[in-house]
Amino acid sequence: MLDVEGLTKRFGAVTALDDVSFAIAEGEVVGLLGENGAGKTTTLRLLAGSLYPTAGKIFIGGRDLFREPLLAKRKVGYLPEQLPLDGRMRVRAYLDYVGRLRGLSSRDRADGVRHVLAVCGLEGVAERGIAALSRGLRTRVGLAQALVHNPELVLLDEPTAGLDPQQVLRMRELILSLSGHHTILFSSHNLHEVSECCKRVVVLKEGRVAAEDALASLEGKDGDTRVLRLRLSQPPDDVCGALAALAEVTHAEPADGAVLVTVLASEGVRERLAAEVVARGWGLCEMSEMSESLEDVFQRHVGVEG
Image: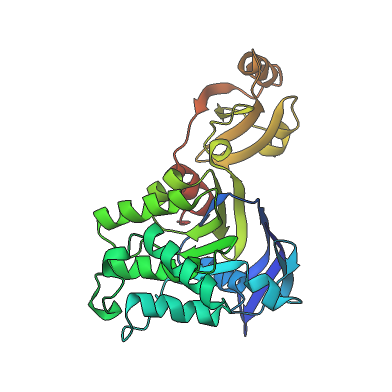
């Protein structure tokens, strides 16, 4: 559904995104993570077509966003962090207005507005002025305008920002209800929310992709692999490279005086790896299996450097 290739965006001397590439399959719900300034909002604005890239390509449902912008943008619904609402309008009239901007016919507008009012739980406030609504209801109106034309791809920038715990829960349930019917990419600082809604994440750090994988794999819970923590008393100079070269090891990276090693999940793999390390004289002090939370994964890939 979405293919991003070498996406780069510079604002003068500042590089906001640097050669970012990732893909999202139809029907997936994917979390976009990163610290403030990592490039999340810039990425979403580029995908929505409201910014033009310095370099790179974006394909939405097979359409090139910058060569076929009208056809590609019809497939996209976008909820920016700053809600795109006109407080002078009533909810139903505003959604009808958005449908007109989207080029929907009178019949399609009526159907679309009726559908999103029901899906977003707004039927009871359809004739109320937007300015009089609570923050949670305004956010739902913002989501409704992103859905009124039934887009294939929905982009959500911090959809729960500023909401109270009950409103966050309702928004999370709403996002989950949309999964399968739409492909969704949303950014969030709420890691619990991402872990509840997504099976896969893209992690940005300083404008680059720091990690892109299924949550189960990143957290060491993938059925095909295991993540082991090794601490060695006499590690070789390039300890990660040396470990990655061993049979059944697919990846190795440093972690606070130890090494996290991803191995193929097979019977006896820990024993075989331990024997290899001992035979090479690296001094095996610790081997433990890891099962990280999303918070651990985020800190490992994006954590503040001291």
